[in-house]
Each structure stands twice: as structure tokens, then as C-alpha cells.
Image 1 (cartoon, rainbow, N blue to C red):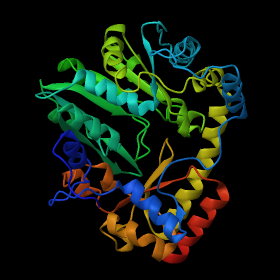
Image 2: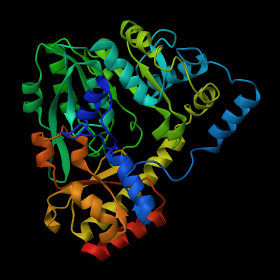
Image 3: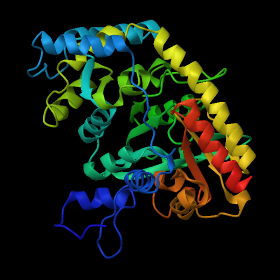
Image 4: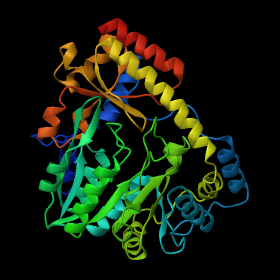
Length: 405
């Protein structure tokens, strides 16, 4: 923990994700804490979700070529033209969404900046921003920075997966709901929202004249018969949806931080107005490299097939170790309940797991509003990643089965 600092909006950010203690001291995020714990103990890190292998060689070669060609100064604030055109082509090819690459596509420093600029552009004090819960911590932090009030609707475990509580969604919405942030495929639960669930969200948005901001970074990493459906493709939703995605997960290049926002020109103008005062632009030689590989649909399909197999390995291992597993339909992650093993506090268990089993995970309540009903309902749930090499996952599952099975 660090000592309390000067007053300011940063304190609201810290409180929104449970990092500020009553005495004002500030802790590191649970992700930083667990990764440091793995490094200190030598435990296998199945907590933080980053690949342990690089993305396609074609992307790296294209970035090197761009650097050598002198593309090392500021990129245009909207993004290099070839990437904006590649993004528009991607949306048309996969989803039938027609975009003007000059007015309806904005390149960002990862999806994180795209989400932040969208929320900051559209919501402020007196407004409400509705998200699913659990939620990626960036969503809560951006809402806190905006000064808006964060309200949530839960995803509920049952029958081997998580599903949206539609009644709770409708109850959480109000005329003050300015933005609805939707993450599908969903981190941390691995749920892929169904068309029925998405239509319920769309109806709430239309009824309350809200804008939907979608976090779709795992859009190509779906398994079995699951299908990712962008909210923008639903009737009446194109004009009120900002779609955020990224190359990081699709091409295993998370450190490049090349993301984008697409949507109607008036909403993109609002987001651009804020985004230009955050980074202005970044990744000048990386953007043309992503433009080149974004036309490659086979690499994401191959990655998804590989991840499906690794997901099965981890789900089977966790089940053999005695966890109650929610089988993910997408993403890098699987959530599992440790209550059947006699552990009712996932945060405490995660801190002990390196000693007990030589493995690191992340507690699912870290993705919830501190003290909320959902955080209590998921108090015993842990998130494990399977975006690691097979031998690493096999050893991690062997350790867990040995410790608990």
C-alpha cells in the first residue's frame, strides 16, 4: 500500500475498484499483486491474461518495415488511413456493418483509451452509466473519472455458465442512464451474450435514450456453437452504439495497444474531441502493421480453435481438483467456484494459492463493486486464464489436482 495522496478525482477511481482503504492508503490492483506474488514464489501465473507467445510474424515484419521506412513521427489523430479502411472492411466483412472510414472510425491506444474517451465524452455528474457486473475494472475507473454514477446489472452463474439477469437490468436503468457499457464476450466470466440478452439491453437503451458502448475485444475468440453478435447490428442500434475493439487479443499482440472505436459520425466526433487530448496518437509504425494483418481471418480462427482446446484442459483440471466450473463460451478466462472445497473467500484463497498449490489466480470479486450483492454472491469465485502454452497449463492443473483433488 502507498500513503494517502492529495485530494482529487483519482481517489474516486481508487474507491471504484476497491483500492482505497478507510484510512486513505491505496493498494496495488489485484492483478499487480497476484503477478508479483507469482514472481516472488515461482508459482504458475494463471491470473493475469496475457499470451506467453507472440502474434503473427507477418505483423512483426510489417512493423519493422514501417520503422525502417521512417513511419516514426505522429500518426494522424484519427489513425493512419490504411488502418481506418481496414477496420471498416473488417466490420463489413464480418458483420455487414457499413462504415465511412473517414468519419466513423477512430483509432485509439488500445481498447482502454477507446472506452475511456467514450465514457468521458458522453457521461458526467448527474448521469448514470450502467454496466454488467462483474465488470472489467477499466469500466468502473472510467465512470469514476467522468463523475457519473455507476449502476450495475448482474451476470448470474447457473447451469454451467453465466447469464444476464434481464429483470435486474431493467430495474437498474432510469431516465438518468446516459451510457450502457456492454462487454461481450465477457471478462471475467467468459459468457457470450445471446441475441435475446442483447435485445433486452437494446430495448433498455432505446427506452432511456442511452448510448451503448460495447467492449468487443474478444470478438473472434468464441468457442463451440457460440456466436458473437455486435449490438450495432440490432434493429435501431447502429445510430446509438459505439463499438470498441482491439488487435491485442485477436492477434496476441497485447503490448502494441492498437485499438479502435467505430460508430455514427456524431458520436465519433464526441469521442475524438476527448481522445485527442488523451494520447492524440500513438503506435505510428504499428498501425500500418495491424492494417495489413486485419485482413487475415485464418489466424484468429486458428487461435480460437487452439484456445478452445486449452479451455477444455483447464476446465477438466479444475473440475478434477474439486472446483465448480462455469464453462466459458469465449475470451481467455474461466471462472470457478471454490466453495465446494471449503473456501468461501476467493481473495484470501488467491493469496494462499501459491503456497497451497503453486498456482496464481485472481478473485472474481475484484471485478465487482466493493461490497455489492454481486460481489457477495461471487465471493468464493476465482478466475483462471488459459491463454498460456499447453505444458504450462498441464503443470498448473496437475498442481491443483494434487493439492485439492
